[in-house]
Each structure stands twice: as structure tokens, then as C-alpha cells.
Image (cartoon, rainbow, N blue to C red; front, side, top):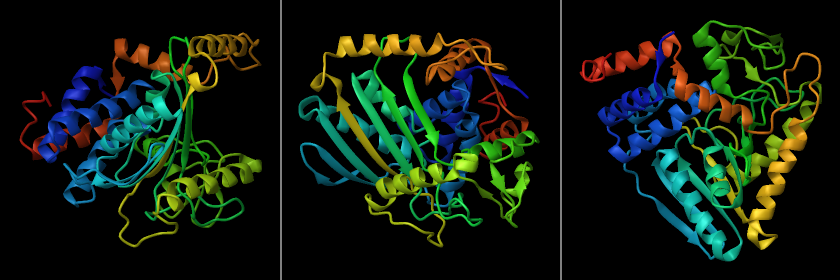
Length: 349
């Protein structure tokens, strides 16, 4: 498994995307986000996604340079049609707009539809937290293929439907939670396949509805399970609610469209902390709260307690120094793409 420095990996990813038709700005943004996911330890949303993105560009499922259209606009709300542009570009711009509206209106929200994969949802609410606001975002894949069975079912009816909250604080790293409402993100199954490893019980069932720890059973007709294990009805209810916000409220709808075109619908909110209490006091108390949580004596089998988002921060700091391990299958795919575009020697591949 090759170990690559984050700067070099961004350079490789950016050049591959430009070769595939993306602009320099689009390529740089996607590289920043995907390599950032690797740094944070979320390899399922990292550079393993790049071959898929390039396939989607070639199939016209991602449209480089797509128009950004505001369909509805008020002082507190925005509705945006991304026209199948890179989700990273569209959602970043929408969150910027939402933050600016919340500076004067104190609370602002937006919906986005017809955009490609947005990557790690945390990237966008953390923007709000950096601006002194509480950020929230939900995401749903609209009517593209589903991956998660409702609680008690064995056929997929829902997406992995992530939700994220990010909170401003005086901590060294951001305080946030970013999670799928399924037992696991689909990308982690693909990562296990690429690495040839088993997965924990409770993540998937096979095509016949039997529990499985073999990740290969998932693409062979298996299904992800909702978050919660025996209490999976909680994850199921959360997922269904997220689909209402990000699928139905955005106008994407529900169910499956035969085209299979990936379509990330998103709902975003920014809450201006200053509208509720002084920001400096709030940030100080959130940091104290985090310290209160992490001072808990660890249970058996645990080294220590972390505040939400701390593991990602520590992973990022470590990987910036030590480099990023890229699984052989992903590295081989990136190299093959570079060869196909005749830029392998330029990228040192």
C-alpha cells in the first residue's frame, strides 16, 4: 500500500480531473475535499472516489462548468439547481450564501438539487462553525439507486442519508458530528472490498436477507442496514426524516429513477450564535463541555474519550506529517487513468 504525501496526492487528483474536463478551480476544490477526507481518516470519501467521478464526467452525469441557478431567493432562504455540477462546488457556494444571509437574518436555510456527490457532509457545516455559527446539513441521493433497507425489510428503499452538525468552539479541532443514518456509509463497504477485509456484523444483509460479514455480498444484491442494530428503527426513522428534508423538500422525490444518475439533494441551515448569546462565551463553554466529556474515565477496552470530531482532527494532524496510505486497487486505478490521459510521467506515476 503506497504512502503518499497530501500535497502530492492533491496534485495527482487535480491533474487527473483537469485531464477529464474539469476546470482548474473545480479540480482544485474536489482534490482539496477528497484528500481532506483521507487525511481525516475517512478513506471511503477520499481519492477512492476519483475514478467514479471521472466515469460520471465521461457519462455526462457530472457536468464540469455547469450553471448555478437560483430558483427561489428570500432574505432567509435559497433554492438552488446545480445542473449536475460538482457537488463540492455547488454546496460550498450555497453554504457561503447561507452563512452571509444568517449574518443579518440570524437564521438562514437552503435546499440544493441536481448536483453530483458532495463528499463528506462535514465540510460544509464546519464552514458555518468557522464563521461563528452552528451549521447543519442533511443529504440524500434523490431517486438514484438506494442502498438501505427500512427496519425489518430486506430490500433497499433509502439512501445512506447523512446528517451533520458543526459547533463553533475554542477547541483546537472542530466540534462536529457527521454520520450516515445507515449502519455504515456505502463507501466503507467498497473500501473493505478494495482491501480484501471483512466487515463487522450488523452492517449488511445478503440478497436473501441473511446477516453477512463478507463485503462482496453487498454488490451481489445485498443491502445496508439502518443505524442502531436491534434498535434500527431509530436509524430508520432518522433516515426517513432526512429524506423528507433532502429529497422531498428539495423536489427530488423518492424511490428509484431507472437512469441511475447520482443526485445529491441537500438541506442546509446556519444559526448565528450571536443572536442567542455572546459568541466568545459560547465558544469557551463548548470547549469546557468537551473537556468535561473527555475527562470521563475510559471504560474497559478504550484508551480515552474523545469529543465529537476530535478523532478526525488528530488523524489529519498525523497524516499531514506521516502521509496517506492509499490502497493498491485505488492507486492502480489512478495510475491507469494517468496513463490513459498520457500524463503518467508528468505525475510521476
